[in-house]
Length: 84
Image (cartoon, rainbow, N blue to C red; front, side):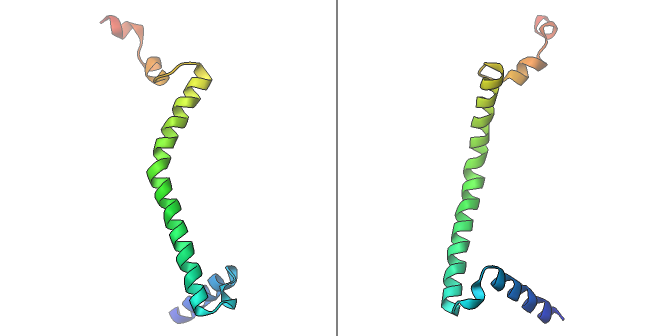
């Protein structure tokens, strides 16, 4: 039963990506290239996306409110607390 399920999943995978018409070495080459490209994209997302999100946040604050810096912190701070 598990063997049949795995075989069906393999056939679905190969037919979706048109790997069923390739020779075994071509399948391996395509899967290696696809895996490497996927790995590079994931590394790029995890390494550079957080920094880019911070840059986009600062630009959005500047474009929306015309100020640089942390606008949200100035909203939280009230004048009464500074006087204490």
